[in-house]
Length: 130
Image 1: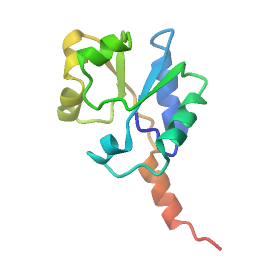
Image 2 (image 1 turned 90 degrees about the vertical axis):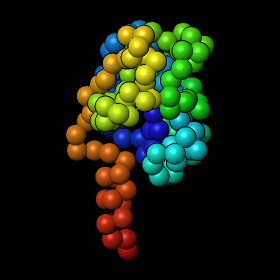
Image 3 (image 1 turned 45 degrees about the vertical axis):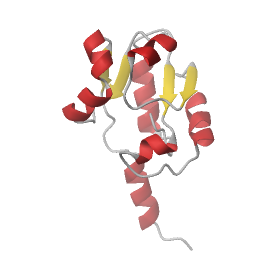
């Protein structure tokens, strides 16, 4: 995940994901990875990791997670299930998660409506200061 401007939608995703096992490992994408498909994160990698580590549903955070999950990455981190929000297109899902899908270990989690980092940025931009 990106976990930029950590908000209750992120927390809800992590809560749902944690209910599918007894240990939640969360991969955080590097800025360069995120920039390949959307805007540059506002928070630094260190700040995004700290935000996710502070969530009670998370057991471990791994920096520099790849977008396209490989069998090697799954095996290196002893992963039994890969999860993502259901807010991505089927084309994107099939590109980023083709290996876990083939392995039968991919599952989507419901997206929290009404909140997103993009929405927060829009609110901040429209707020009068002073």
